[in-house]
Amino acid sequence: MQLSSLNKSTSVITLGAFLNTESEELLFAHLKEVLQSEKDRVILDFRPVDHMNSAGVSALVKLAAMAKQNRVKLFAYGLNKRYGEILALTGLYEGIPALDSVYEEVESLSRAKLAELEKMDFKAGKQSDAGWAPKVHRLTVTEKPEGAFAKNMDGRKIIGQFQGFGPMWEKTYWLNIKKAGIRKEDVVLAMQEHFLEFQPSENSFYPTSKGIAPGEIIFVDSRTLGGIVSTGVMVLYMDDRSFTFITPHGHPEAGWVTFSVDEGEDSIYVQIQGLARASDPFFEIAFRIAGSKFQETIWKHVLSSLAKYLGVEENVQMKKYCPATDLQWSKVSNILYNSQIRSFPLNITTLFKRSL
Image (cartoon, rainbow, N blue to C red):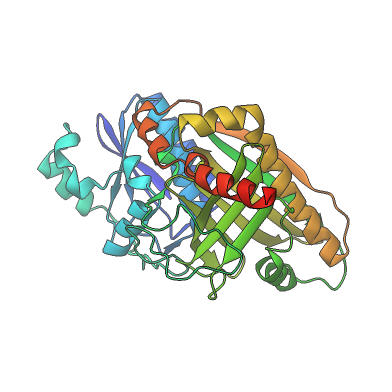
């Protein structure tokens, strides 16, 4: 990955072969250099990329949030068709639009400079989409798992952090496993096969018959202080060490959560990392009152349950920070899809049945 100057107002970050967790620090360092040079446009050149995983896209989300706060415009260049679909699927196109379609927005970038960009030296990457969900415009429910209410999912759009309302939060929970005989593959398999069992009693996950697989829907029924919230998630990305869920319109959050396993010299590191913002004003208020703590309790419980299952120490830890503090008032209309409000008839019916 390298930073170069295209003209007095525009820099180019030529991305490396792999866009992943390790890319984040260098991306941020390059953007800080841009800020010091007082340039206000940055082109991210994707042509050298072989593969990006969900952690790499998370790094781009945080980079775009930082750029927005500093009034710097980001643009994506050299995307193949599939990578363009992935940016659309994750909602990242709002923070990093494709340069090919926004020439008029890059006022100081002449056609001659674009030709100069095209000639820049680079090693072409494969831009592999391995592990990513297929292109999805709206969710289609074709199967209702037994026991699931399965509400507020059919026909809903998938939304990322740039389509949400509240401040963006990154919350990271982790567990260190130090026990002879336990392999990384064992931990990944345990998370995938027993994920539902690891949930607290008030949080029920219902996958379809295809299980946790890219593009598959997982229904979620949560029992909160405000009653049952029926919604779900879609599996956005999956590889041999991680899987990521993304939210639909109406979910309490806009964004995703990633479950991953890494192996160190003397331990295995299990992590749950959420990068999301409240999807609408109603949920933002709910998160501030109690929802945020409720959420933290859920993911700590999942890791503690994993530790018990594996017979290891429950040393669950957590940290959080806010990459973007702004409220996106243009997304207020998300409240029309609010799953808490739309689950109200379900709660009335449930209370009526209990009273009989």
